[in-house]
Image (tube, rainbow, N blue to C red; front, side, top):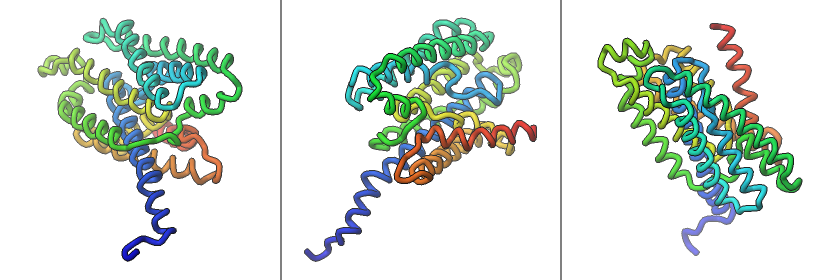
Length: 286
């Protein structure tokens, strides 16, 4: 038929549009959401080493997702369970440590650390009693895996909405980073702003964990490195973090697919291998 593509070109186009393209889109969105969440968490706790999983979100998501895998549920249910577990962890953190968020963020931080430890113990228990044939998939989820990436439209839309919501309060975040007392004296509503940071960073992290499991170091390394490079104002830092985080995860996913081809590594392993030396170098320079 005139105008029909050759078989090899048609196959290449199908691979690009149905496999590679959506996976790159999901990787970029997840990396951007993690880096944005990391920047917001570092502002919330006024600590450049804060990271998105500080509140136990990955532990709650991993626990319910592993329960579903151990029970033999089909894959479409796993992201739903992971999202529910993330929201459960956020709710518990808010209930346990959020009462004093208007005055001090320390109780929220301690609640997150305790929840992460508790979820970690329960995850170890589930792995110990799970059927042996299901352990590889469970471990890949815990280490972060983009192999099950689907439509990229929802993650990319979530990234755009999250960046827009964060930029809407960028001026508040600049003042809040100085000190809560100074921010209050300048008219910044400290408690509502902190709750907004908590909710937005938690929602970004929950979406990523539900989509791709726990991918470490992106949310810690990218905003910290950008601050070290001079990106201080949040109107520049937040979109830069989203772009850099997305690009980093796309690169890590490409390496995960090719470095040991035809085998595929969990993308969380690559981000850790890239992140650890970079963070050590940044800390040494500091």
